[in-house]
Length: 424
Image (cartoon, rainbow, N blue to C red; front, side):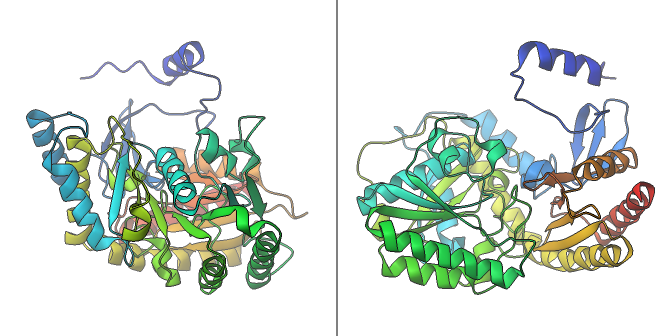
Protein backbone atom coordinates (compact mmCIF):
# COMPACT_ATOMS: atom_id res chain seq x y z
CA UNK A 1 0.00 0.00 0.00
CA UNK A 2 1.42 3.39 -1.01
CA UNK A 3 1.70 6.02 1.72
CA UNK A 4 0.48 9.15 -0.08
CA UNK A 5 1.25 12.55 1.46
CA UNK A 6 -2.26 13.85 0.65
CA UNK A 7 -3.59 17.06 -0.95
CA UNK A 8 -2.71 19.48 1.87
CA UNK A 9 0.95 18.44 1.98
CA UNK A 10 1.17 18.79 -1.82
CA UNK A 11 -0.34 22.30 -1.66
CA UNK A 12 2.13 23.18 1.11
CA UNK A 13 5.06 21.97 -1.02
CA UNK A 14 3.67 23.76 -4.09
CA UNK A 15 3.61 27.04 -2.13
CA UNK A 16 7.10 26.40 -0.80
CA UNK A 17 8.94 25.12 -3.88
CA UNK A 18 6.99 25.99 -7.07
CA UNK A 19 6.20 29.41 -8.52
CA UNK A 20 2.93 31.13 -7.45
CA UNK A 21 1.82 31.10 -11.12
CA UNK A 22 1.25 27.33 -10.76
CA UNK A 23 -2.47 27.03 -10.01
CA UNK A 24 -4.80 24.07 -9.48
CA UNK A 25 -8.50 23.32 -9.90
CA UNK A 26 -10.94 22.96 -6.98
CA UNK A 27 -11.31 24.39 -3.48
CA UNK A 28 -10.92 20.87 -2.13
CA UNK A 29 -8.59 19.21 -4.65
CA UNK A 30 -7.86 15.48 -4.53
CA UNK A 31 -4.35 14.07 -4.92
CA UNK A 32 -4.43 12.21 -8.22
CA UNK A 33 -2.44 9.04 -7.70
CA UNK A 34 -3.21 6.64 -10.53
CA UNK A 35 -4.72 6.46 -14.03
CA UNK A 36 -6.36 3.65 -15.96
CA UNK A 37 -7.73 4.42 -19.45
CA UNK A 38 -10.68 6.85 -18.95
CA UNK A 39 -10.43 6.74 -15.15
CA UNK A 40 -8.32 8.46 -12.50
CA UNK A 41 -7.96 7.47 -8.85
CA UNK A 42 -7.01 9.68 -5.91
CA UNK A 43 -4.87 8.95 -2.86
CA UNK A 44 -7.97 7.84 -0.92
CA UNK A 45 -8.93 5.31 -3.62
CA UNK A 46 -11.83 7.37 -5.03
CA UNK A 47 -12.50 6.76 -8.73
CA UNK A 48 -13.15 9.56 -11.24
CA UNK A 49 -14.34 9.49 -14.83
CA UNK A 50 -11.87 11.84 -16.52
CA UNK A 51 -13.70 14.15 -18.93
CA UNK A 52 -10.76 16.46 -19.60
CA UNK A 53 -7.92 14.05 -20.56
CA UNK A 54 -5.23 16.28 -19.06
CA UNK A 55 -6.36 19.00 -21.50
CA UNK A 56 -6.73 16.81 -24.60
CA UNK A 57 -3.52 14.85 -23.98
CA UNK A 58 -4.44 11.25 -23.13
CA UNK A 59 -6.67 10.65 -26.17
CA UNK A 60 -5.81 6.93 -25.94
CA UNK A 61 -6.48 6.77 -22.18
CA UNK A 62 -4.31 6.91 -19.07
CA UNK A 63 -1.49 4.35 -18.86
CA UNK A 64 -2.80 2.58 -21.96
CA UNK A 65 -1.21 -0.89 -21.63
CA UNK A 66 -0.66 -1.38 -25.38
CA UNK A 67 1.16 1.94 -25.74
CA UNK A 68 2.99 1.56 -22.43
CA UNK A 69 4.45 -1.77 -23.56
CA UNK A 70 6.16 -0.03 -26.50
CA UNK A 71 7.38 2.84 -24.27
CA UNK A 72 8.91 0.45 -21.72
CA UNK A 73 10.56 -1.69 -24.40
CA UNK A 74 12.17 1.40 -25.93
CA UNK A 75 13.20 2.73 -22.47
CA UNK A 76 15.01 -0.54 -21.83
CA UNK A 77 16.70 -0.49 -25.25
CA UNK A 78 17.78 3.07 -26.10
CA UNK A 79 16.54 6.14 -24.27
CA UNK A 80 18.50 9.03 -25.76
CA UNK A 81 21.21 9.97 -28.25
CA UNK A 82 20.05 13.34 -29.74
CA UNK A 83 19.55 13.91 -33.46
CA UNK A 84 23.28 14.12 -34.23
CA UNK A 85 23.23 10.29 -34.30
CA UNK A 86 21.10 8.11 -36.55
CA UNK A 87 18.21 6.29 -34.86
CA UNK A 88 15.22 4.61 -36.43
CA UNK A 89 12.15 5.69 -34.36
CA UNK A 90 12.33 9.39 -35.32
CA UNK A 91 12.40 8.74 -39.09
CA UNK A 92 9.72 6.04 -38.83
CA UNK A 93 7.48 8.48 -36.96
CA UNK A 94 8.11 11.24 -39.52
CA UNK A 95 7.25 8.81 -42.33
CA UNK A 96 4.06 7.67 -40.55
CA UNK A 97 2.99 11.27 -39.95
CA UNK A 98 3.54 12.13 -43.61
CA UNK A 99 0.77 9.64 -44.51
CA UNK A 100 -1.79 11.11 -42.10
CA UNK A 101 -1.04 14.85 -42.14
CA UNK A 102 -3.34 16.93 -44.40
CA UNK A 103 -2.59 17.30 -48.11
CA UNK A 104 1.03 17.62 -49.18
CA UNK A 105 2.47 18.15 -45.68
CA UNK A 106 5.26 15.61 -45.33
CA UNK A 107 8.20 17.08 -43.36
CA UNK A 108 8.35 17.20 -39.55
CA UNK A 109 10.66 18.88 -37.04
CA UNK A 110 10.27 17.27 -33.61
CA UNK A 111 10.49 19.03 -30.27
CA UNK A 112 8.90 18.53 -26.81
CA UNK A 113 6.06 21.02 -26.23
CA UNK A 114 3.30 22.80 -28.11
CA UNK A 115 4.99 26.14 -27.35
CA UNK A 116 8.20 24.92 -29.02
CA UNK A 117 6.29 23.63 -32.04
CA UNK A 118 4.48 26.94 -32.52
CA UNK A 119 7.69 28.93 -31.99
CA UNK A 120 9.32 26.77 -34.68
CA UNK A 121 6.39 27.27 -37.05
CA UNK A 122 6.57 31.06 -36.66
CA UNK A 123 10.33 30.98 -37.26
CA UNK A 124 9.86 28.81 -40.35
CA UNK A 125 7.27 31.24 -41.74
CA UNK A 126 9.72 34.12 -41.31
CA UNK A 127 12.58 32.20 -42.93
CA UNK A 128 10.47 31.14 -45.93
CA UNK A 129 8.72 34.46 -46.61
CA UNK A 130 11.49 36.85 -45.58
CA UNK A 131 8.78 38.79 -43.73
CA UNK A 132 8.58 39.57 -40.03
CA UNK A 133 5.00 40.13 -38.82
CA UNK A 134 2.03 37.93 -37.91
CA UNK A 135 -1.75 38.00 -37.64
CA UNK A 136 -3.42 36.18 -34.76
CA UNK A 137 -6.97 35.85 -33.46
CA UNK A 138 -8.38 37.27 -30.25
CA UNK A 139 -8.76 34.69 -27.44
CA UNK A 140 -6.14 32.39 -28.97
CA UNK A 141 -3.54 30.44 -26.98
CA UNK A 142 -0.32 29.41 -28.71
CA UNK A 143 2.26 28.99 -25.95
CA UNK A 144 4.40 30.45 -23.18
CA UNK A 145 7.66 31.26 -25.03
CA UNK A 146 8.24 34.90 -25.93
CA UNK A 147 6.98 34.78 -29.51
CA UNK A 148 4.15 32.30 -28.89
CA UNK A 149 2.99 34.40 -25.93
CA UNK A 150 3.11 37.43 -28.24
CA UNK A 151 0.70 35.73 -30.70
CA UNK A 152 -1.55 34.58 -27.83
CA UNK A 153 -4.76 36.60 -27.65
CA UNK A 154 -5.98 35.50 -24.20
CA UNK A 155 -5.03 38.21 -21.68
CA UNK A 156 -4.57 35.77 -18.78
CA UNK A 157 -1.82 33.88 -20.65
CA UNK A 158 0.13 36.99 -21.75
CA UNK A 159 2.37 37.04 -18.67
CA UNK A 160 5.16 39.23 -20.08
CA UNK A 161 4.17 42.93 -19.84
CA UNK A 162 6.49 43.81 -22.77
CA UNK A 163 5.64 41.43 -25.60
CA UNK A 164 6.63 41.68 -29.25
CA UNK A 165 4.75 44.25 -31.34
CA UNK A 166 5.12 42.15 -34.52
CA UNK A 167 1.57 40.79 -34.06
CA UNK A 168 -1.76 42.26 -35.15
CA UNK A 169 -4.82 40.75 -33.49
CA UNK A 170 -8.16 40.42 -35.25
CA UNK A 171 -11.58 39.34 -33.89
CA UNK A 172 -12.24 35.61 -33.68
CA UNK A 173 -15.56 33.95 -34.59
CA UNK A 174 -17.27 34.90 -31.34
CA UNK A 175 -19.43 37.85 -30.43
CA UNK A 176 -22.38 37.19 -28.14
CA UNK A 177 -24.22 40.15 -29.66
CA UNK A 178 -23.99 38.62 -33.15
CA UNK A 179 -24.61 35.29 -34.87
CA UNK A 180 -21.70 32.94 -35.54
CA UNK A 181 -21.89 33.77 -39.26
CA UNK A 182 -21.81 37.54 -38.61
CA UNK A 183 -18.87 37.21 -36.20
CA UNK A 184 -16.97 35.08 -38.75
CA UNK A 185 -17.52 37.66 -41.52
CA UNK A 186 -16.36 40.44 -39.16
CA UNK A 187 -13.22 38.40 -38.49
CA UNK A 188 -12.45 37.97 -42.20
CA UNK A 189 -13.10 41.65 -42.89
CA UNK A 190 -10.66 42.57 -40.13
CA UNK A 191 -8.02 40.26 -41.67
CA UNK A 192 -8.60 41.92 -45.06
CA UNK A 193 -8.04 45.37 -43.51
CA UNK A 194 -4.77 44.27 -41.89
CA UNK A 195 -3.55 42.81 -45.20
CA UNK A 196 -4.47 46.05 -46.95
CA UNK A 197 -2.36 48.14 -44.58
CA UNK A 198 0.63 45.90 -43.87
CA UNK A 199 0.31 42.78 -46.06
CA UNK A 200 3.83 43.07 -47.47
CA UNK A 201 5.29 42.66 -43.95
CA UNK A 202 3.15 39.70 -42.82
CA UNK A 203 4.75 36.25 -42.83
CA UNK A 204 1.78 34.21 -41.56
CA UNK A 205 -1.54 34.05 -39.84
CA UNK A 206 -1.65 31.57 -36.94
CA UNK A 207 -4.94 30.05 -35.78
CA UNK A 208 -6.41 27.12 -33.89
CA UNK A 209 -9.14 25.37 -35.94
CA UNK A 210 -11.22 25.33 -32.74
CA UNK A 211 -10.01 27.66 -30.01
CA UNK A 212 -9.61 25.47 -26.93
CA UNK A 213 -8.71 27.78 -24.07
CA UNK A 214 -10.59 30.58 -25.82
CA UNK A 215 -13.85 28.75 -25.05
CA UNK A 216 -14.20 25.98 -27.69
CA UNK A 217 -14.88 28.63 -30.33
CA UNK A 218 -15.95 26.75 -33.48
CA UNK A 219 -15.88 28.67 -36.79
CA UNK A 220 -18.44 28.01 -39.56
CA UNK A 221 -17.47 25.57 -42.31
CA UNK A 222 -16.59 28.24 -44.91
CA UNK A 223 -14.40 30.37 -42.64
CA UNK A 224 -10.93 28.89 -43.23
CA UNK A 225 -11.49 28.44 -46.97
CA UNK A 226 -12.19 32.14 -47.44
CA UNK A 227 -9.31 33.00 -45.12
CA UNK A 228 -6.82 30.78 -46.97
CA UNK A 229 -7.77 32.24 -50.36
CA UNK A 230 -7.20 35.75 -49.03
CA UNK A 231 -3.83 34.83 -47.50
CA UNK A 232 -2.60 32.95 -50.59
CA UNK A 233 -3.38 35.92 -52.81
CA UNK A 234 -1.04 38.00 -50.67
CA UNK A 235 1.79 35.49 -50.14
CA UNK A 236 0.92 35.01 -46.46
CA UNK A 237 1.24 31.54 -44.94
CA UNK A 238 -1.45 29.83 -42.85
CA UNK A 239 -0.19 28.15 -39.67
CA UNK A 240 -2.77 25.85 -38.07
CA UNK A 241 -2.20 25.04 -34.42
CA UNK A 242 -3.56 21.52 -33.79
CA UNK A 243 -1.86 21.17 -30.40
CA UNK A 244 -5.19 20.70 -28.62
CA UNK A 245 -7.41 19.57 -31.50
CA UNK A 246 -5.22 16.95 -33.18
CA UNK A 247 -5.26 13.16 -33.33
CA UNK A 248 -8.95 12.21 -33.60
CA UNK A 249 -10.20 14.64 -30.92
CA UNK A 250 -12.86 16.24 -33.15
CA UNK A 251 -13.88 13.13 -35.10
CA UNK A 252 -11.22 13.61 -37.77
CA UNK A 253 -7.48 13.08 -37.38
CA UNK A 254 -7.00 16.86 -37.52
CA UNK A 255 -9.72 19.45 -36.91
CA UNK A 256 -8.73 21.51 -39.97
CA UNK A 257 -9.98 18.58 -42.11
CA UNK A 258 -13.55 19.63 -41.20
CA UNK A 259 -12.86 22.81 -43.17
CA UNK A 260 -11.42 21.27 -46.37
CA UNK A 261 -8.27 23.36 -46.12
CA UNK A 262 -4.62 22.31 -46.23
CA UNK A 263 -2.51 24.70 -44.13
CA UNK A 264 1.03 25.69 -45.11
CA UNK A 265 2.37 24.71 -41.68
CA UNK A 266 0.68 22.60 -39.01
CA UNK A 267 1.72 22.13 -35.39
CA UNK A 268 0.99 19.09 -33.22
CA UNK A 269 1.76 18.03 -29.64
CA UNK A 270 -0.26 16.83 -26.61
CA UNK A 271 -2.10 13.69 -27.80
CA UNK A 272 0.74 12.63 -30.10
CA UNK A 273 2.61 11.31 -27.06
CA UNK A 274 -0.45 10.40 -24.93
CA UNK A 275 1.43 11.85 -21.94
CA UNK A 276 4.99 11.47 -23.24
CA UNK A 277 6.40 14.90 -24.20
CA UNK A 278 6.60 15.25 -27.98
CA UNK A 279 5.56 17.89 -30.50
CA UNK A 280 6.29 18.86 -34.09
CA UNK A 281 5.89 21.57 -36.67
CA UNK A 282 5.24 20.15 -40.11
CA UNK A 283 5.13 21.51 -43.64
CA UNK A 284 5.39 20.71 -47.36
CA UNK A 285 8.45 20.16 -49.61
CA UNK A 286 8.60 23.74 -50.84
CA UNK A 287 8.56 25.46 -47.45
CA UNK A 288 10.75 22.82 -45.75
CA UNK A 289 13.61 23.43 -48.19
CA UNK A 290 13.96 27.01 -46.90
CA UNK A 291 15.02 25.82 -43.42
CA UNK A 292 18.72 25.08 -43.99
CA UNK A 293 20.40 26.75 -41.00
CA UNK A 294 21.61 24.28 -38.38
CA UNK A 295 18.89 23.57 -35.82
CA UNK A 296 18.05 20.79 -33.39
CA UNK A 297 16.03 19.96 -30.29
CA UNK A 298 18.12 17.99 -27.78
CA UNK A 299 15.20 15.87 -26.58
CA UNK A 300 12.79 16.39 -29.47
CA UNK A 301 11.71 13.14 -31.10
CA UNK A 302 13.99 11.07 -28.86
CA UNK A 303 13.67 7.27 -29.30
CA UNK A 304 11.23 6.85 -26.37
CA UNK A 305 8.93 9.71 -27.41
CA UNK A 306 9.03 8.71 -31.10
CA UNK A 307 8.35 5.02 -30.43
CA UNK A 308 5.49 5.96 -28.10
CA UNK A 309 4.02 8.29 -30.73
CA UNK A 310 4.09 5.53 -33.35
CA UNK A 311 2.23 3.26 -30.88
CA UNK A 312 -0.29 6.07 -30.30
CA UNK A 313 -0.98 6.47 -34.04
CA UNK A 314 -1.32 2.70 -34.43
CA UNK A 315 -3.76 2.55 -31.50
CA UNK A 316 -5.90 5.41 -32.87
CA UNK A 317 -6.13 3.64 -36.23
CA UNK A 318 -6.68 0.11 -34.89
CA UNK A 319 -9.41 1.20 -32.45
CA UNK A 320 -11.21 3.64 -34.79
CA UNK A 321 -10.91 6.52 -32.33
CA UNK A 322 -11.92 9.06 -35.00
CA UNK A 323 -15.22 7.21 -35.41
CA UNK A 324 -15.67 6.86 -31.65
CA UNK A 325 -15.10 10.61 -31.17
CA UNK A 326 -17.56 11.33 -33.98
CA UNK A 327 -20.33 9.03 -32.67
CA UNK A 328 -19.94 9.85 -28.99
CA UNK A 329 -19.54 13.53 -29.85
CA UNK A 330 -23.03 13.50 -31.39
CA UNK A 331 -24.40 11.72 -28.30
CA UNK A 332 -22.66 14.17 -25.96
CA UNK A 333 -23.83 17.25 -27.88
CA UNK A 334 -27.42 15.96 -28.02
CA UNK A 335 -27.37 15.46 -24.24
CA UNK A 336 -25.87 18.91 -23.63
CA UNK A 337 -28.47 20.58 -25.87
CA UNK A 338 -31.25 18.87 -23.87
CA UNK A 339 -29.75 20.34 -20.70
CA UNK A 340 -29.63 23.75 -22.42
CA UNK A 341 -33.42 23.59 -22.89
CA UNK A 342 -33.82 22.85 -19.19
CA UNK A 343 -31.34 25.31 -17.65
CA UNK A 344 -31.32 29.01 -18.73
CA UNK A 345 -27.76 29.42 -17.40
CA UNK A 346 -26.53 27.47 -20.47
CA UNK A 347 -26.08 30.12 -23.16
CA UNK A 348 -24.38 28.03 -25.84
CA UNK A 349 -23.22 24.51 -26.70
CA UNK A 350 -20.50 24.28 -29.36
CA UNK A 351 -17.64 22.14 -30.60
CA UNK A 352 -16.91 19.08 -32.72
CA UNK A 353 -16.54 15.42 -31.79
CA UNK A 354 -15.29 14.97 -28.25
CA UNK A 355 -14.29 18.61 -27.90
CA UNK A 356 -17.42 20.36 -26.69
CA UNK A 357 -17.93 23.57 -24.74
CA UNK A 358 -20.88 24.76 -22.67
CA UNK A 359 -20.90 28.52 -22.07
CA UNK A 360 -22.61 29.67 -18.88
CA UNK A 361 -24.07 33.16 -18.54
CA UNK A 362 -25.91 34.79 -15.64
CA UNK A 363 -29.37 36.25 -16.18
CA UNK A 364 -27.78 39.71 -16.70
CA UNK A 365 -25.53 38.32 -19.48
CA UNK A 366 -22.32 38.30 -17.44
CA UNK A 367 -19.99 35.27 -17.46
CA UNK A 368 -21.11 32.76 -14.80
CA UNK A 369 -17.56 31.83 -13.72
CA UNK A 370 -18.47 31.23 -10.05
CA UNK A 371 -21.23 28.86 -11.12
CA UNK A 372 -18.80 27.10 -13.47
CA UNK A 373 -16.39 26.56 -10.55
CA UNK A 374 -19.22 25.26 -8.38
CA UNK A 375 -20.33 22.82 -11.09
CA UNK A 376 -16.76 21.52 -11.40
CA UNK A 377 -16.59 21.05 -7.62
CA UNK A 378 -19.92 19.17 -7.47
CA UNK A 379 -18.95 16.96 -10.43
CA UNK A 380 -15.62 16.14 -8.78
CA UNK A 381 -17.44 15.05 -5.62
CA UNK A 382 -19.74 12.94 -7.83
CA UNK A 383 -16.81 11.23 -9.55
CA UNK A 384 -16.38 13.27 -12.75
CA UNK A 385 -13.44 15.54 -13.62
CA UNK A 386 -14.28 18.30 -16.09
CA UNK A 387 -12.37 21.26 -17.53
CA UNK A 388 -13.12 24.97 -17.85
CA UNK A 389 -11.90 27.67 -20.20
CA UNK A 390 -13.04 30.81 -22.05
CA UNK A 391 -11.99 34.43 -21.65
CA UNK A 392 -14.39 34.69 -18.70
CA UNK A 393 -13.50 31.21 -17.36
CA UNK A 394 -17.20 30.40 -17.75
CA UNK A 395 -17.08 27.65 -20.38
CA UNK A 396 -17.32 24.02 -19.26
CA UNK A 397 -14.88 21.97 -21.36
CA UNK A 398 -15.71 18.39 -22.34
CA UNK A 399 -12.52 16.80 -23.73
CA UNK A 400 -12.42 13.20 -22.44
CA UNK A 401 -10.10 10.38 -23.48
CA UNK A 402 -11.41 9.06 -26.80
CA UNK A 403 -11.70 5.56 -25.33
CA UNK A 404 -14.84 6.47 -23.35
CA UNK A 405 -18.08 4.54 -23.86
CA UNK A 406 -21.74 5.45 -24.31
CA UNK A 407 -22.25 4.51 -20.65
CA UNK A 408 -19.56 7.02 -19.65
CA UNK A 409 -21.32 9.79 -21.57
CA UNK A 410 -24.65 8.89 -19.92
CA UNK A 411 -23.02 8.82 -16.47
CA UNK A 412 -21.46 12.26 -16.97
CA UNK A 413 -24.74 13.77 -18.28
CA UNK A 414 -26.65 12.45 -15.24
CA UNK A 415 -24.07 14.00 -12.90
CA UNK A 416 -24.03 17.28 -14.85
CA UNK A 417 -27.82 17.47 -14.61
CA UNK A 418 -27.52 16.96 -10.85
CA UNK A 419 -24.90 19.73 -10.58
CA UNK A 420 -26.95 22.18 -12.67
CA UNK A 421 -30.01 21.40 -10.57
CA UNK A 422 -28.06 22.02 -7.35
CA UNK A 423 -26.89 25.48 -8.41
CA UNK A 424 -30.25 26.56 -9.85
